[in-house]
Image 1 (tube, rainbow, N blue to C red):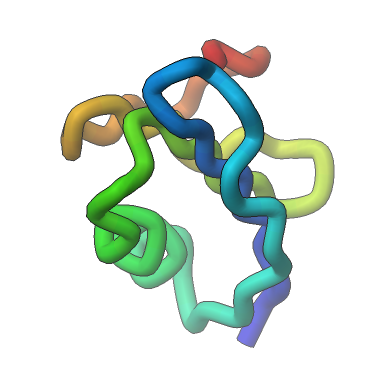
Image 2 (tube, rainbow, N blue to C red; image 1 turned 180 degrees about the vertical axis):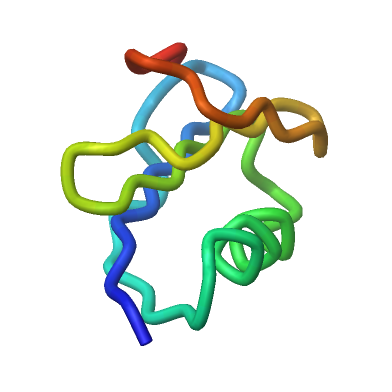
Length: 68
């Protein structure tokens, strides 16, 4: 189990969720982010590594820097 940092933003671009989540894998962490239906954009981080940036339900993996 690993700790991930989840940031989600509303339609105005304001930070809406800023939580630590525990997940078995990167894929599980992304699934948890997808479950937050009211968020427009989310980022899943594991330490300094951006696991995925999600926008409108689509995940973009392996970005080298924040996209949101």
